[in-house]
Amino acid sequence: MERELSNVSVGDVTAAACPEDLVRAVRAAGVRDERVLRAVRATPRAGFVPAAHVAHAYEDVPIPIAHGQVTTQPSLSATMIEGLRLTGVEHVLEVGSGLGYQTALLARTARDVVGVDLWPDLVRAARRNLARQGIRNAEVRVGDGGQGVREHAPYDAVIVSAAFPTVPAPLVEQLRPGGRLVQPIGTGGREEVVLFERTVIGLEPRQVLTLASFVRLHGRFGYPS
Image 1 (cartoon, rainbow, N blue to C red):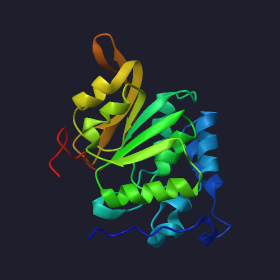
Image 2 (cartoon, rainbow, N blue to C red):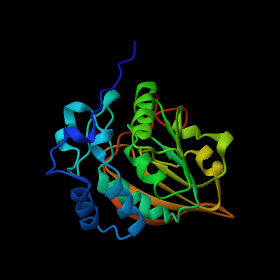
Image 3 (tube, rainbow, N blue to C red):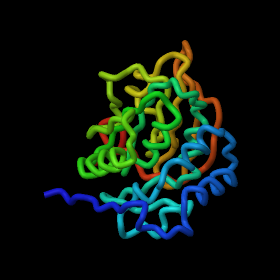
């Protein structure tokens, strides 16, 4: 039987810690997109972490979750989202939704989000967390993220929160021409987070956004689960 993840309400965190603490950390990391900063300010991370780690919800750190996974550090999520240059009209694919915090940030900066995660218990928790925050323009489903979600393609933007040496071919195919994709490129542990753009000749790297450590991408187009 799969373990249900236990999350907490925002009221369980002391008033001394709040989203504004993360806004300061995100700014310090170099993020300047006001839409991204507003999304961080509007999203209580305490509603997206396991109860055992709620005291660290407003620290700019990754937080362990089930299946040996971790949440992406908020300033890193913000850096990746800023790289997509969202204006609010985009249809976004998110690979690796975890407990839904990054999904919520995307939902507040794009038109809508399709998230996918390999683990059913994480997906159930993400859905609950998003619903509690009143977020209705994000759908999270169980699946092999490297295969994308073909029935909702094409996407204007794709964000991948797990490492692999190459971008999975289905994600390239599901990205519209002119669309942008951000993925950590490497074997898992220390990666270049690369911004790509799909052009008429294929997927072209545009910029290394930062260096960071990520868990590995698992699935048919990643590492064996």
